[in-house]
Length: 298
Ligand code: ADP
Ligand code: MG
Image (cartoon, rainbow, N blue to C red):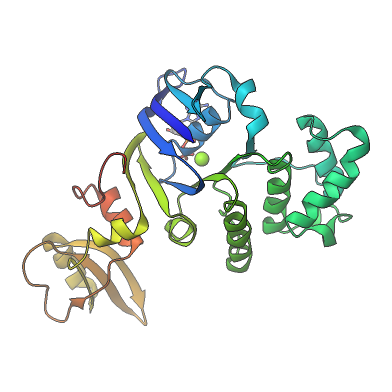
């Protein structure tokens, strides 16, 4: 169980990246969803003991760990948002290097442990290939291999799916889901699909504030009976946006396919009721439409 209480971070220079964030995370996959600059990386670096908070505390399994990163490190695996690799090393050399830095496994064990970890993330076939030949997904899997060395109870992954192509993303989803079966995984992302695919619970962060802690089902249920779908011309879209909250408008075969949110009243002509999606809930939350996700700790 990871408990975060009133976490605040003000960077030197005055940017407030986190403002009184409180959160309880236990077991399985937990999503941290927010746009760029919302404070996700700041939160993860603080949890990983790499950055000191300005205020607030962190408890891991009932033990205060704020200011004591050495209490966290043995139980933590961390995949940073920007993970540096040495392109000229092979996968197994890179991993051995990272394991040595982490102090995991004795000298005689490094090779066996490295091989086991590479198998675990389905990279055994590429162990002797140089990292510079790896695809984005393979690099992320190598990053996961170092993060799960020592079998940590808590795994923190910061925007790991950004930049992966659809096939690699799917593959990476499966790996993360599998890892979350036996540990707590905290996944930060700005991609709603990541949360919809992986996370039974998630929190929404914006401008350093935690806006909501909820489940995808709860978030969708909060919009039940308020979403409509239809098509409109380009001029009509502007007029429509003045009278209703448009969550999505994209061109399909040259016409605007629009999703809109309407609490009361009849929908415009030609619009039909639509099942709410997590994307609707998130976009509405980001637009500041009030109380769409249950606020506070769920
Ligand atoms: P996210 O990961 O959600 O994109 P970050 O935690 O990286 O958000 O950033 C949150 C805010 O803190 C942003 O306004 C960002 O510009 C600022 N910030 C991040 N790192 C630093 C830093 N080292 N010094 C000053 N400001 C920072
Ligand atoms: Mg970030």
